[in-house]
Amino acid sequence: MPRFAANLTLLYTELPFLDRFEAAASDGFRGVEYLFPYEWPVHELQARLKDHRLTQVLFNLPPGDWAAGERGIACLPDRVDAFREGVARALDYAGALECTRLNCLAGIKPVGLDDGVARDTLVANLRWAAQQLAPAGITLTVEAINSRVDMPGFFLDTAEKTLAMIEAADEPNIALQYDLYHMQIMSGDLIRSLERYLPDIGHIQFADNPGRHEPGTGEINFDRIFSTLDEIGYSGWVSAEYHPSGATSASLSWLGASS
Image (cartoon, rainbow, N blue to C red; front, side, top):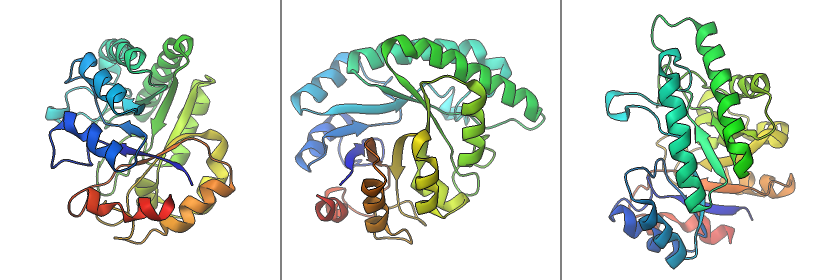
Protein backbone atom coordinates (compact mmCIF):
# COMPACT_ATOMS: atom_id res chain seq x y z
CA MET A 1 0.00 0.00 0.00
CA PRO A 2 1.08 3.64 -0.34
CA ARG A 3 3.41 5.31 2.13
CA PHE A 4 1.05 7.35 4.30
CA ALA A 5 1.98 10.57 6.09
CA ALA A 6 -0.02 12.65 8.56
CA ASN A 7 -0.66 16.34 8.07
CA LEU A 8 -0.18 17.69 11.59
CA THR A 9 -1.91 20.98 10.86
CA LEU A 10 -5.25 19.25 10.29
CA LEU A 11 -4.84 16.00 12.25
CA TYR A 12 -4.47 15.64 16.03
CA THR A 13 -5.71 19.16 16.69
CA GLU A 14 -6.97 17.94 20.07
CA LEU A 15 -3.28 18.10 21.09
CA PRO A 16 -0.73 20.92 21.21
CA PHE A 17 1.19 21.00 17.95
CA LEU A 18 4.48 19.61 19.22
CA ASP A 19 2.69 16.68 20.85
CA ARG A 20 1.17 15.64 17.53
CA PHE A 21 4.40 14.04 16.32
CA GLU A 22 4.28 11.39 19.04
CA ALA A 23 0.58 10.77 18.43
CA ALA A 24 1.14 10.27 14.70
CA ALA A 25 4.00 7.85 15.29
CA SER A 26 1.95 5.91 17.85
CA ASP A 27 -0.81 5.48 15.25
CA GLY A 28 1.61 4.03 12.73
CA PHE A 29 2.57 6.99 10.55
CA ARG A 30 6.20 7.20 9.48
CA GLY A 31 6.00 10.54 7.73
CA VAL A 32 4.56 13.93 8.65
CA GLU A 33 3.84 17.20 6.94
CA TYR A 34 2.19 20.45 8.00
CA LEU A 35 1.37 23.73 6.36
CA PHE A 36 4.12 25.87 7.83
CA PRO A 37 7.00 25.26 10.28
CA TYR A 38 8.04 28.85 10.79
CA GLU A 39 6.26 29.44 14.09
CA TRP A 40 8.51 26.92 15.86
CA PRO A 41 12.28 26.88 16.42
CA VAL A 42 13.80 24.39 14.02
CA HIS A 43 15.57 22.50 16.81
CA GLU A 44 12.19 21.74 18.42
CA LEU A 45 10.93 20.20 15.19
CA GLN A 46 14.18 18.31 14.67
CA ALA A 47 13.88 16.78 18.13
CA ARG A 48 10.31 15.58 17.54
CA LEU A 49 11.23 14.00 14.24
CA LYS A 50 14.27 12.25 15.69
CA ASP A 51 12.58 11.10 18.90
CA HIS A 52 9.70 9.48 17.01
CA ARG A 53 11.63 8.29 13.93
CA LEU A 54 9.56 10.35 11.56
CA THR A 55 10.37 11.69 8.11
CA GLN A 56 9.57 15.30 7.33
CA VAL A 57 7.75 14.81 4.04
CA LEU A 58 6.80 18.34 2.98
CA PHE A 59 5.79 21.82 4.05
CA ASN A 60 4.81 25.01 2.23
CA LEU A 61 6.83 28.05 1.34
CA PRO A 62 5.80 31.09 3.41
CA PRO A 63 2.34 32.17 2.17
CA GLY A 64 2.50 35.90 2.79
CA ASP A 65 0.11 37.42 5.32
CA TRP A 66 -2.20 34.49 6.07
CA ALA A 67 -4.17 36.40 8.68
CA ALA A 68 -4.92 39.10 6.10
CA GLY A 69 -6.18 36.55 3.60
CA GLU A 70 -3.11 35.86 1.49
CA ARG A 71 -2.85 32.23 0.42
CA GLY A 72 0.49 32.37 -1.30
CA ILE A 73 2.20 35.22 -3.11
CA ALA A 74 3.87 33.55 -6.08
CA CYS A 75 1.56 35.15 -8.67
CA LEU A 76 1.72 38.66 -7.21
CA PRO A 77 4.09 41.00 -9.09
CA ASP A 78 4.47 43.38 -6.13
CA ARG A 79 5.57 40.57 -3.79
CA VAL A 80 8.54 39.09 -5.66
CA ASP A 81 11.08 40.22 -3.06
CA ALA A 82 9.00 38.72 -0.26
CA PHE A 83 8.62 35.51 -2.24
CA ARG A 84 12.38 35.20 -2.62
CA GLU A 85 12.95 35.90 1.05
CA GLY A 86 10.44 33.16 1.82
CA VAL A 87 12.27 30.66 -0.38
CA ALA A 88 15.48 31.35 1.52
CA ARG A 89 13.73 30.88 4.86
CA ALA A 90 12.10 27.65 3.71
CA LEU A 91 15.46 26.35 2.49
CA ASP A 92 16.95 26.85 5.95
CA TYR A 93 14.16 24.83 7.55
CA ALA A 94 14.22 22.17 4.84
CA GLY A 95 17.94 21.61 5.26
CA ALA A 96 17.68 21.25 9.02
CA LEU A 97 14.65 18.93 8.79
CA GLU A 98 16.04 16.90 5.86
CA CYS A 99 12.90 17.67 3.89
CA THR A 100 13.08 17.06 0.14
CA ARG A 101 9.73 18.60 -0.90
CA LEU A 102 8.63 22.23 -0.59
CA ASN A 103 5.21 23.27 -1.87
CA CYS A 104 4.51 26.60 -3.55
CA LEU A 105 1.08 28.20 -3.17
CA ALA A 106 0.34 30.30 -6.24
CA GLY A 107 -1.99 32.63 -4.37
CA ILE A 108 -5.29 34.38 -4.94
CA LYS A 109 -5.19 36.74 -7.89
CA PRO A 110 -6.38 40.22 -6.88
CA VAL A 111 -9.28 41.72 -8.79
CA GLY A 112 -7.81 43.93 -11.48
CA LEU A 113 -4.53 42.07 -11.87
CA ASP A 114 -4.08 41.03 -15.48
CA ASP A 115 -4.05 37.23 -15.95
CA GLY A 116 -0.98 37.44 -18.16
CA VAL A 117 0.97 39.44 -15.61
CA ALA A 118 0.02 36.99 -12.87
CA ARG A 119 1.02 34.08 -15.07
CA ASP A 120 4.39 35.59 -16.02
CA THR A 121 5.13 36.43 -12.39
CA LEU A 122 4.27 32.93 -11.25
CA VAL A 123 6.35 31.24 -13.93
CA ALA A 124 9.36 33.43 -13.16
CA ASN A 125 9.03 32.77 -9.44
CA LEU A 126 8.70 29.02 -9.95
CA ARG A 127 11.77 28.96 -12.16
CA TRP A 128 13.81 31.01 -9.70
CA ALA A 129 12.71 28.97 -6.69
CA ALA A 130 13.43 25.66 -8.40
CA GLN A 131 16.90 26.84 -9.27
CA GLN A 132 17.56 27.76 -5.63
CA LEU A 133 16.29 24.38 -4.38
CA ALA A 134 18.08 22.21 -6.92
CA PRO A 135 21.56 22.24 -5.33
CA ALA A 136 20.01 20.94 -2.09
CA GLY A 137 18.24 18.12 -3.94
CA ILE A 138 14.80 19.56 -3.16
CA THR A 139 11.76 19.28 -5.41
CA LEU A 140 9.40 22.24 -5.68
CA THR A 141 5.79 21.07 -5.81
CA VAL A 142 2.94 23.22 -7.07
CA GLU A 143 -0.60 22.57 -5.88
CA ALA A 144 -3.96 23.12 -7.51
CA ILE A 145 -6.58 24.15 -4.91
CA ASN A 146 -10.28 24.19 -5.60
CA SER A 147 -11.82 27.63 -6.15
CA ARG A 148 -15.41 26.48 -5.66
CA VAL A 149 -15.46 25.77 -1.93
CA ASP A 150 -12.18 26.42 -0.12
CA MET A 151 -10.32 29.22 -1.91
CA PRO A 152 -12.38 31.32 -4.31
CA GLY A 153 -10.08 33.15 -6.69
CA PHE A 154 -7.10 30.84 -6.24
CA PHE A 155 -5.02 31.25 -9.36
CA LEU A 156 -4.29 27.57 -9.99
CA ASP A 157 -7.46 25.58 -9.40
CA THR A 158 -7.04 22.66 -11.81
CA ALA A 159 -4.30 20.16 -12.53
CA GLU A 160 -4.24 21.32 -16.15
CA LYS A 161 -3.56 24.95 -15.24
CA THR A 162 -0.89 23.91 -12.78
CA LEU A 163 0.88 21.65 -15.24
CA ALA A 164 0.89 24.46 -17.80
CA MET A 165 2.77 26.66 -15.34
CA ILE A 166 5.19 23.85 -14.51
CA GLU A 167 5.86 23.26 -18.20
CA ALA A 168 6.43 26.98 -18.77
CA ALA A 169 8.89 27.21 -15.88
CA ASP A 170 10.79 24.30 -17.46
CA GLU A 171 12.91 23.18 -14.52
CA PRO A 172 13.48 19.48 -13.85
CA ASN A 173 12.80 19.67 -10.11
CA ILE A 174 9.23 21.03 -10.28
CA ALA A 175 6.34 18.59 -9.83
CA LEU A 176 2.59 18.57 -9.40
CA GLN A 177 1.14 18.25 -5.90
CA TYR A 178 -2.09 16.35 -6.51
CA ASP A 179 -4.74 16.72 -3.82
CA LEU A 180 -7.57 14.23 -4.31
CA TYR A 181 -10.06 16.35 -2.37
CA HIS A 182 -9.48 19.50 -4.38
CA MET A 183 -9.43 17.67 -7.70
CA GLN A 184 -12.61 15.74 -6.93
CA ILE A 185 -14.36 19.08 -6.46
CA MET A 186 -12.95 20.64 -9.61
CA SER A 187 -13.00 17.78 -12.10
CA GLY A 188 -13.52 14.32 -10.61
CA ASP A 189 -12.39 11.35 -12.75
CA LEU A 190 -9.62 10.73 -10.22
CA ILE A 191 -8.46 7.32 -11.39
CA ARG A 192 -7.88 8.39 -14.99
CA SER A 193 -6.30 11.64 -13.83
CA LEU A 194 -3.82 9.83 -11.59
CA GLU A 195 -2.91 7.53 -14.45
CA ARG A 196 -2.52 10.43 -16.87
CA TYR A 197 -0.52 12.71 -14.61
CA LEU A 198 1.63 10.11 -12.83
CA PRO A 199 4.90 11.20 -14.49
CA ASP A 200 4.32 14.76 -13.25
CA ILE A 201 3.10 14.00 -9.70
CA GLY A 202 5.57 14.64 -6.89
CA HIS A 203 3.23 14.41 -3.91
CA ILE A 204 -0.35 13.35 -3.14
CA GLN A 205 -2.74 14.50 -0.42
CA PHE A 206 -6.27 13.38 0.37
CA ALA A 207 -9.53 13.98 2.17
CA ASP A 208 -13.03 12.78 1.36
CA ASN A 209 -15.63 14.99 -0.28
CA PRO A 210 -17.88 16.67 0.71
CA GLY A 211 -16.82 17.84 4.15
CA ARG A 212 -13.05 17.30 3.87
CA HIS A 213 -13.19 14.53 6.47
CA GLU A 214 -11.59 11.09 6.63
CA PRO A 215 -12.06 8.37 4.00
CA GLY A 216 -15.45 6.74 4.23
CA THR A 217 -17.36 9.92 5.05
CA GLY A 218 -18.00 11.01 1.48
CA GLU A 219 -18.11 9.97 -2.15
CA ILE A 220 -14.52 8.98 -2.98
CA ASN A 221 -13.70 5.28 -3.26
CA PHE A 222 -10.39 5.30 -1.41
CA ASP A 223 -9.88 1.55 -1.53
CA ARG A 224 -9.84 1.84 -5.30
CA ILE A 225 -7.69 4.97 -5.25
CA PHE A 226 -5.03 3.42 -3.03
CA SER A 227 -5.01 0.21 -5.08
CA THR A 228 -4.59 2.26 -8.25
CA LEU A 229 -1.56 4.07 -6.82
CA ASP A 230 0.07 0.68 -6.29
CA GLU A 231 -0.93 -0.55 -9.72
CA ILE A 232 0.48 2.45 -11.57
CA GLY A 233 3.72 2.43 -9.56
CA TYR A 234 3.43 5.62 -7.55
CA SER A 235 6.23 5.49 -4.97
CA GLY A 236 5.90 8.87 -3.24
CA TRP A 237 4.18 9.86 -0.03
CA VAL A 238 0.40 10.05 0.30
CA SER A 239 -0.58 12.50 3.03
CA ALA A 240 -3.77 12.51 5.06
CA GLU A 241 -4.84 16.16 5.01
CA TYR A 242 -8.37 16.08 6.37
CA HIS A 243 -10.45 17.39 9.26
CA PRO A 244 -11.30 14.34 11.39
CA SER A 245 -15.00 14.07 12.11
CA GLY A 246 -14.10 13.13 15.71
CA ALA A 247 -10.89 12.32 17.53
CA THR A 248 -8.07 11.76 15.05
CA SER A 249 -7.11 8.26 16.16
CA ALA A 250 -10.74 7.17 15.85
CA SER A 251 -10.77 8.38 12.22
CA LEU A 252 -7.99 6.04 11.08
CA SER A 253 -9.89 2.88 10.21
CA TRP A 254 -8.79 3.45 6.62
CA LEU A 255 -5.15 3.24 7.72
CA GLY A 256 -5.62 -0.09 9.43
CA ALA A 257 -7.42 -1.44 6.41
CA SER A 258 -4.59 -0.30 4.15
CA SER A 259 -1.69 -1.69 6.17
